[in-house]
Image (cartoon, rainbow, N blue to C red):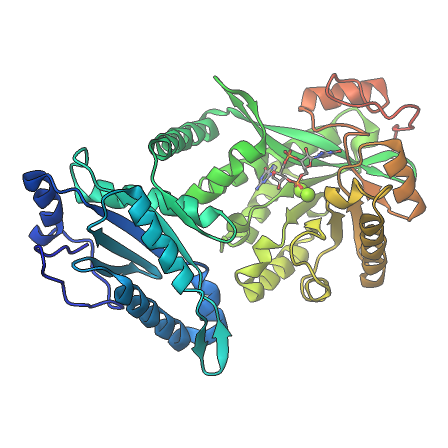
Length: 456
Ligand code: C2E
Ligand code: MG
Ligand code: MG
């Protein structure tokens, strides 16, 4: 960020971008603060939310025009001698002068977001841009301009999380949160290397005869201090940091290896079973995914037909053409493909037609409403009809009680999984459950009384 001497406005090179290079001018405002005790300024990190969508809708020249207009709108609002600069992409940095406190900076930011509600018109198309703004107000405790900018960016990350995006001021808790996140990242990296991650398995059941047809592998983290952590506590971080790639690679290998152990073991009923493994969008986009799957199958000795890969809609959005290609190659290999959490998000008929899935997994939110909620019931029925007409299989997720099971059976749903049959369990608990010959048999599992689980 370039900050000029008092009263001097830096040239309005908005839209061209200032590099974050060291320059004497950059630290000038901080020195000025220190020498004169004048900390009446704030740094605002401003971003045009979902700018990639704007580029998709309006094309690159429309996107460029919007950036220029954003710069002009921002500049027109700035009180002298404040300055603004475009940092990169759709991100701008503002040094707001003559603000005495957080409330004043927030007032400016709110006015800016309000001003952006004015629609932007490009070749006859109207679009209402949305700003997210993070604010850090200066004080004597800041040693470097980078710290102030970094705090404004932490606040921006929070501002972007809300829907619609808003204005957020930096607070001490955010630094602690960022620190905790860094610590967690280091811990997770170690956990992957040292075997603190474990795979749990949840049986998938044929609802027509209550027999186990396979398992879904669901990762857990045996954290030394925090105990057993569910995926929601670390998968988002793994995705953000890229650790999902080594994690996913380990998970795929582990799940295939476990199924081979079960299939080759003494229990005949597990011989024909299959394994479903979740893939995150980042794994799915890996150019060497198909090769890696081929390798894991070869290394573990699992036949491709016994492996199912589960992907959600988010894997298909970024590059649909590439996703179709990957899916075809996996299909050619003989591996099955499940569309996970079907029905939530934007999943449409178009998806079913375009992407070669074998199986739809009905999201548990619909399964849990199948008995008492008319809309959920209707959605489950429609998904089953759709699957039939597209020649796909269906697995209902999250079956929790006998009423839900009965309803799904009466609708003709072929397969399901859920706490009613068994919770996800470690391999030893699965072995113990198989010994008893009925679902249950571990303290975690809810027994499905009187079910015939033997054989397939
Ligand atoms: P998912 O693939 O949709 O998995 C189903 C989730 O529903 C699992 O949560 C499972 O424990 C839970 N579930 C199963 N039956 C019931 C039920 O009857 N009631 C309720 N309320 N929940 C039930 P979990 O294990 O916490 O996993 C959450 C998500 O984390 C998974 O959703 C999947 O998206 C992701 N995940 C889990 N393991 C992996 C992994 O190895 N790799 C990747 N990339 N993602 C994973
Ligand atoms: Mg899944
Ligand atoms: Mg799911």
